[in-house]
Image: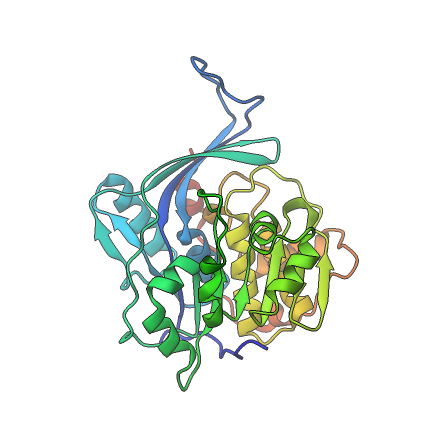
Length: 338
């Protein structure tokens, strides 16, 4: 079983480590744009992306959250910094760099094409930092920050570690890439990543194989839902049936929902159900962090949509009864939508 984390507080917030981007998201394409063509679209939005998707979603869900990342000192970087500060994300662990990462996302047919200028490097966490209640990072950052992560995870108030991985452009999918799993409580690869690393034939087989190395594995399968395993229970849950405009940031929102659930001591099924609902709440408009939901919005979606078989609503009472921050002001929401 993973460590049982205590609820996040300003003294022990959730810490997200990862690269951040200024996301420029366009939706409403009728076809893939070809060289020499200008295609007009119906909607466009600017927002913090990358690891900032998780940080903003966690903050909107009411968890004190810090972000360890590089932020540019150029105009795009200042825009990202201003938007993160407006969401209440603690940037005291962020470092400055000359140029902000920028990604252009073109949403089409329920998927998106990405073009990025920038790097995936992140600051190395310092072992002397106070231990966060939960850490969200990919395996590369956990490897680089192993000294700090190990001290936090095995300290007197253990940090719960949520680990992710990414696409391996080398095509090797080496076993060595998974070495940091010994410091991870909840591992959240997507289906393709899980199949490549395990050489399994199905997401269920991959989840079972990975669960031999980490307490909880949650394999996201896009529109096909989720497969999760905690070493004992194997859980398959379909995705919620919601209109899909843009999938940018949905995986990050999913992970944020898992963090909220485990910090509120929910079990595997309600945790995965909540994560599916948080992700689904971001799909109806272009962009990721701009559409990150509040607890009230997640609860409203669950109460007004048909729920798949096996979906647990055990989290609703927690969301209804806890004191929630106010929804982000409409002026802030609309100021970044073009």
